Image 1 (cartoon, helix red, strand yellow):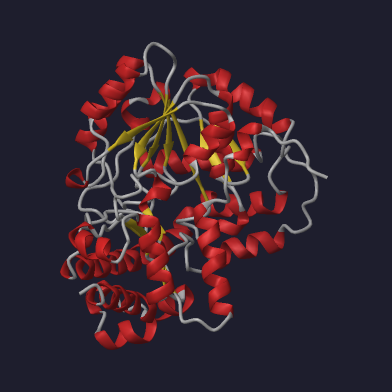
Image 2 (cartoon, helix red, strand yellow; image 1 turned 90 degrees about the vertical axis):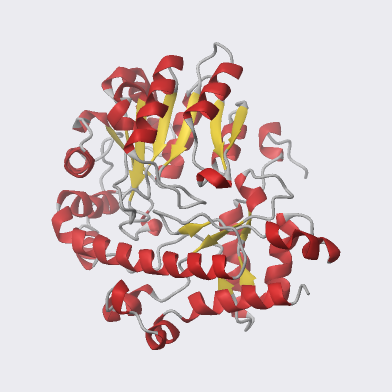
Amino acid sequence: MRPALNPLVLSLKESATLAINLKALELRRKGKDIVHFGFGQSPFPVPEMIQAALRDNADKKDYLPTQGLPELCEAVSEFYKTEFGYDFKPSDVCVGPGSKELIFQIIYLMEGPLLVPVPSWVSYGPQAALRGKEIIPIPTSRENKYRLTPELLDRACYSAGQSQKLLIFNNPNNPTGALYHENEIKELAEICRAYQVIVISDEIYAMIDFDEWPMSSLATFYPEGTIVSGGLSKSFAAGGYRLGVVLIPDSLELMMSALKSVVSETFSAVSAPVQYAALKAYGDFEKVRPFVEKTTDIYEYVMNFLHKRFVDMGLNCPKPAGSFYLFPDFENFKEQLRERGIITSGAMTNALLAESSIAVLPGSDFYMPATSLSVRVAAVDFDGARVMESWPGADHVTEKYLREFLPKIEQGCEYIEGFLSGLG
């Protein structure tokens, strides 16, 4: 039997990040010594107090309110107020099975085109495509660390005409590690206000910030039009718990009402034990803070190590300031790659995996031109539990420690260097 499918689904493929994870793990099962820089999952164990809360609440079997456990909504509201200064009430919070699902629900509910800064996370475009929504890419430049500028946003908003516009804004950024500062955010906020743009500020990496200046948000300078999303997956290392949150301002109350209606007809509510575990994460954050600070210190070291090695081997790579991703490109080796018949980032990542046993994602999966020769590196291929237990601090990492506890990080650099040296 050949079923007739919704035509909007036919152009979709499996998420690139999930696909590379399965491929790399399968190669490892077959005995291949793969360096897995393809999948962005926290390598650290879930903090024990959050695990304990999940175990202790395994008996919670009743459906929770559609919007979320009331105590959790209150804790999330207070967390964002204390940590970031946002003015959201508990009634502004909605809990879902991952921020990915909640972002999709909001994109689905909203009219108008989706503005997507490029490069950008792989799933924003396909989510908009499932809605039949127009996608307006806004290319950014390596010279500006792939950050969206007010001029670029202004031009995109103007060209989109008079219809309502939705901007997806990821800060800190996946795939580039870029971070926006207050002066940049203020100017972007004025453009959003002038065009009445509704913003989804995807802040899932907000706590993984190791820049000289703290992260700033459109929720601070454009609160009336900014929806914030976050969750347990990155800073709390609990991606598999599948719990995300969105915070919707009172000025967009109609959106919250519509979202609750859609939730009630789809997933109904997030797993009750997981919500109680999240209550411990958000409601007792001071006890989790040392975990977040320590893991961020580790990320900072690994990211700085990789950045220096990439630059030293001749790759172009903006220095990351947050998240756990880097976005190097091989443009300086374009002619050598062309002689090998490699002219696209997809062909290059296939060659890196087949010839050098390193898994990365091509820039084209993040809406870059096919020929950009850029790749995304997820700097998380290490045993997080071992590293946490033994971590001496970023300033005290020795070559011996690196080889013993972060072997794949160094090995990945050696594999790329070997690939480049083989180009001639």
